[in-house]
Length: 606
Image (tube, rainbow, N blue to C red; front, side, top):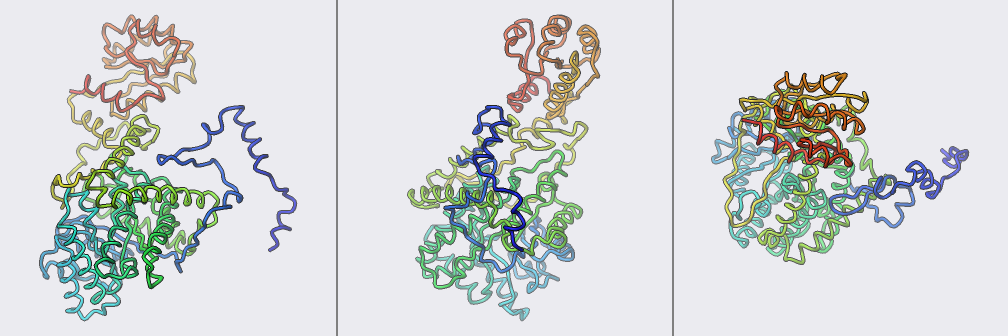
């Protein structure tokens, strides 16, 4: 088709013309403040991109032959028989890769039970936990030989990652010299006995779940990978063999396009690193990218929203060309997953592959002005962080000194503040809560195999962004007194409804009982109704112009009997006056909701 002929009746529009229209729509407002988004890592994301924005970028087309990925189910179950049963049920539903994340295989019999009924030539087996991966691998190799299974058909991975694992446990499993020797032995054992098995898994997901930014997650993953690459090649393992058997395990969050760009950038930078080792085989560059659902953005309240989150996250991973995707059940934040939640998690991927056909096009985002620019920005900033770590002696030296932990904690603090002020919304938790929902009785402990951390290396802590808000609401659910909030609505219909809605959303986040009203004819009538309700908090909901009357007439009736009289909004000119008359608080869009509710909980929740 001749595109010139097709579009000849549409004259080209210059960037300058677009800018003129935008500035006219903004009516003189600052373009950079209104439309340009600055990321946590300090680079700007423009509101739109054009073909000219691709000029000067180093575009890296994908080398993958297909966009197929493994539908992987990670199983967080300590009991071996139960873990096997969960795996078999998943395989029946279409899962073709299993990750065992809590089972401790101590004997050959344990392995027999764990893998009973699983055809390991058709289903990949990923061992995510072991007291000693070398010993576990020897048992697995013996199992393959005993069953007369073709070793070349056995696929999967080992979660051998002592450096990042030290950020879980607080210590290295053994000395650096022993780690290097064991890693080399493990590489040679796998090469000879199960040659298509991956050995090194870099758990970048830990950085994500500790609150790191996408760029930090990528940079620290690459840094750890480079440490292993240097150590293993120094112990006689060829660079291409290390590259061929390395997995990047990323967690995908809700930032849809940025997550696509992060995964694409990982392959660009891995190639850049690997080239320095002069590998003998092109397979060295084809790092295996496995993704899993981020825990950081998942919630206990309104948990079905987690399904929406994991759906977009899985789409990001699939479009970016991930080789394996793990979708975690929506209820895994607060209890052991059940058959229903696991089935839904499996089906999300199956729908994306079998009904949405996301596996049919290789690198579908290639050429997108927006995503190519995001990929370039993420790669550039991650590379700067990578070089900074190398200047400090590499990944291991950086975690021993606490440098990486400090940087992640700084970013996590910024992200937590954005959640606290609701700049970052967590649906159902800090925004738009379900006022009737009760979750305290649904929360139960989950199977956890990790030991308490040591202090040799400062560990990172997994922090879900919603935890502080959940703790407030749980405290209210478990208390003997649920605070009552009376909305005294008066005056301008639009403003009183808007501010009543805002107050409901704010106090509802903590599970307070909200008493809404259609509006009162006079301030006095509203005050009388408030007193009859036996409420703990009265919120004035009106327009700024009408607050003076409302405060003057209703407040004297309330302030000796209700300790907390709040104004919804921020009538700046009247703040001092209203406070002097007895208004105790003002709630508005700049309120730190977490701090405000923490204060009210300390005063009202018994």
